[in-house]
Length: 112
Length: 112
Image (tube, each protein chain N blue to C red):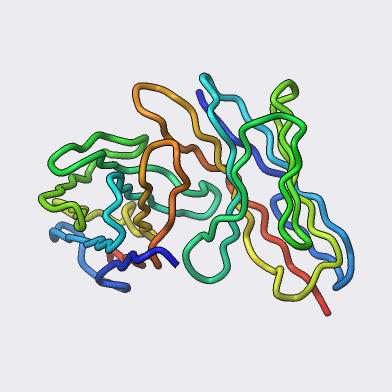
């Protein structure tokens, strides 16, 4: 069964801390891994990763993929209260057509 | 933001009644998707469409049907709603199956 597991499920930190969110996967015919941020509305796209070892960066957020060990991490440095959200990891795989399978999400809370 | 709207945004209905949710896009994207989001399960694919009148099932398609008669509209129908279909429903679009999926604002459905 294709699955994506995120850890931790919940994380509470103080403003200014650095956090690392984890996503591991077991899928056949892997194509890419995506990270989304979800506040009290629709998920918004952060990154798409297809190659191992190449870091994607956007401001204080960065992500990297390890296709050998089948995981990805999302780092957020100098966290702010606006980073509070659910972070979703999704893996695109090929079975017939290409589909996405999502992890459960990590709920991140940044306290001032 | 991608031009995606969903209607209604909130709905309360009774068990056994039919319900239709609408997703409308202004991006002329070929692919459209319906997901449901439940605590502990993340986002799960219900059905998707790869063109007008071309649809296929996702991982949780039982009890749901879809139709796509125009590029811009993708309808999700619950023929006879059950309490287990209480959920938040998200529509997503993408230009191709390899491209990023962008999400609509969601519809919160409560089946009593």
